[in-house]
Image 1 (cartoon, rainbow, N blue to C red):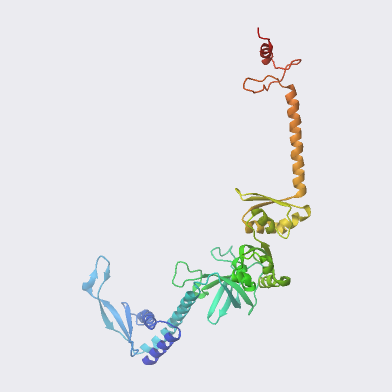
Image 2: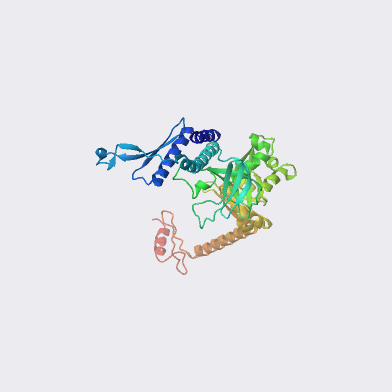
Length: 412
């Protein structure tokens, strides 16, 4: 029985790529705790498995009285008393099953971590295995699963929601998702709630880079680097804007991404389950870039302030609602895409404001002229005119009437 157990352990270690010594040490530690309880020992137990024969020995560690250390309040030397029971193999077999299952699960998680730790940001395709109210489990391949979390953040503020609003997944549905995290099984501090029973790989359907990877799949020019995605603004499940540029002056990056009759962008939209995607031309000129970002609205003019990153956009009256979008969505996405604060004004509002400013200016000028007509005409040697009103029947105020008369007297 002992040799059969040893052979089974070695075969399992080889199959699961587990270190044989590590497997035996873990089994010995687990058996020691079990036998201490089963045999009702007064002191701790130590279990040894013979590496050749597979025989199991159980020892009780009885402390020596003369080895007591007062500083550490512990014994430093022990006598090993053999307390091996007659049915040691049966108990070992029962314990080995649970230990081996734990070790195999940990080894599998560690292997997955090593494989996917450097693959964050990559696109993976999986099949929906299970969907709960908090997460969806995707099967990437045999033995490798990923978690798509969509927790209620009000109830679980420390969790994540990586599912776009309105998306629901049926069993066996094939999905593409972005790898955003791989949990390290050796890190206790960063373990998520219930991590031991959850897949190590965490994927997202809301991350902006999901759109980047989908375009790389559908557009060869982007994959080869001829065309480049410069910026992405996204409201998952609703609408996204993608700014693209080209390193080849003869290539239209927008046309390359849209494809013949919209075939390429249509594949991206299909994978995003109907999310609208606007592809716009990137420009190093801020005014042009802001105008392009507000597509499909037509822009009359853009005035930018590079110091404050503020752009004032003037659009025709019939384009105002299109430029702003439903609940401000188009303007909001354009601001995120460009990184500029965007203020959209209609042409009629701008014209009426300019007319109002002109009328105010004219009224101010008229008031000033009227006021100047009643003011004292005295001008000081420094060139400053008196602000007092002139006396009735005189061009000067009471203070400067006599002064001016003196100045007007002819020299002798």
